[in-house]
Image 1 (cartoon, rainbow, N blue to C red):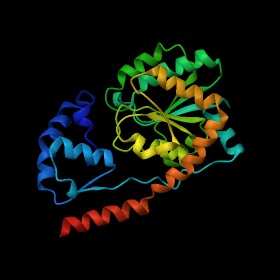
Image 2 (cartoon, rainbow, N blue to C red):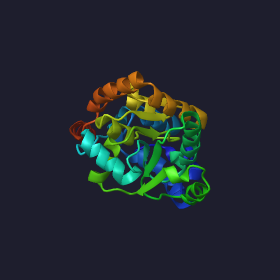
Image 3 (tube, rainbow, N blue to C red):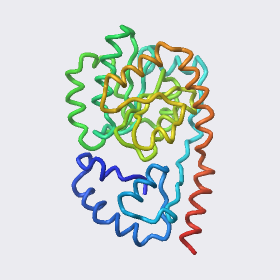
Image 4 (cartoon, helix red, strand yellow):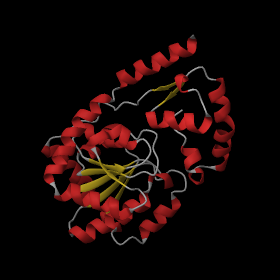
Length: 265
């Protein structure tokens, strides 16, 4: 059970899916001998919301694929030429979905551009999710629309290169049970800005800058900080190199296996 986003943000999910989750989740939890979830935050959320015995819930953290790794200068320049005509860029990776807070990313990017007067671009990489239409509509009238690149869904190897070539990851999602993209960025020596809510502070620790996802000015301030303060940026990169070591698929497999063995007893 990844998270309980359907309870926290019911308007961000199809009604048919919401009905299934609301009806089925308490039954699944009651019947299960062992429950695996992806963070201590999600575990406590399940305990609080459904009064589930904490002893049968195991935290099984996700991992990060090995295809995410730093690129050399020439490789980065090639990717930037391909996507942004050689300019630096902030990057968002994930579905185009209301819960991911893309409208506030656009507003934050506007503020950043007004403050800095730089040629920084914004690259958005991800599939069109549910209720994406408003975002696409708003983007058409967006002042800096020519500096927003919609890269769409990218194959894994290409996505890894786009992540590794970014100036910083921007991921102020309203709610995450885990949240993989900033960790992928950390593995590529790219700093991240994340939301200060749900599981994100637990997962990223001191390796990210945090902002209130509901406050686009706060998000913009963190974008400005990572842009202007090279010392802070390097500190985030160093911390990220250590933080991401905690999340390997070998560790995930071992934790999940222990949870399976508990269910077998």
